[in-house]
Length: 232
Ligand SMILES: Nc1ncnc2c1ncn2[C@@H]1O[C@H](COP(=O)(O)OP(=O)(O)OP(=O)(O)O)[C@@H](O)[C@H]1O
Image 1 (cartoon, rainbow, N blue to C red):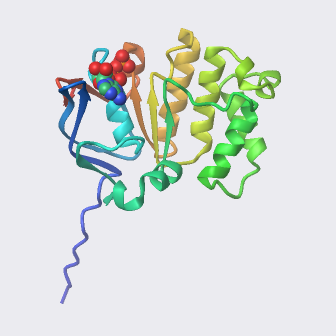
Image 2: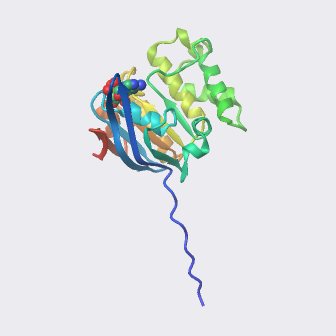
Image 3: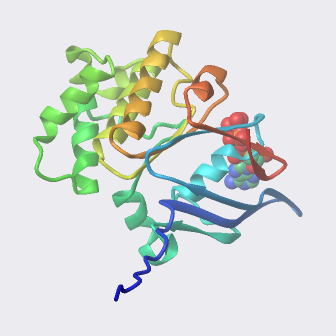
């Protein structure tokens, strides 16, 4: 006699359900996200595109636990991030590269990365060595790696912020216009780094971009239009 075994379907890595967000501007309300349902999977790279002001950064802020939606849920591996705890979710499971970069400008590039690794709880690696490897990979030269980030150019700072996100060894990377301050070749290099992160390391990479070339390098292009996320 054979016994039938049933396995529960695995929850998506990141599931947005009914995600809605409304801002109050004076006495008026404006709903930028209108009940977004979407499942993001491991091993894939997604582009989120759409005109300026359509709500892309807002969507990333909600999905990365930086902000709380008016209604709806974000589930990570099946668990509501409110139950995981927003701060724990942000520190342990996701990395972000936002337009404001949020580098600690009084620290060097290497120190920005090693301190983020400490916060995220990356263990069993020589943090300084890893930071140097990633900065080398992203083309920040050794001299600049040890300068305070305040002294670096916008493009160099953007690469430091990306290296910091990669160092955190989390499941999801959210990047908002990560190549905005970079020349074409450097931007394409970063797209390649993100593709390897998704396809070789099995991470989920979500990139907000206005660049057609960056979007073309992604597995799925999602358009945010009138508060809804449409598959391109
Ligand atoms: N804290 C806030 N309070 C009020 N309105 C806000 C707030 N944050 C964003 N908005 C508004 O929400 C809308 C969406 O903004 P968001 O930054 O998400 O757009 P975006 O698609 O990322 O734009 P861009 O491509 O220019 O970066 C905009 O109209 C913006 O003014």
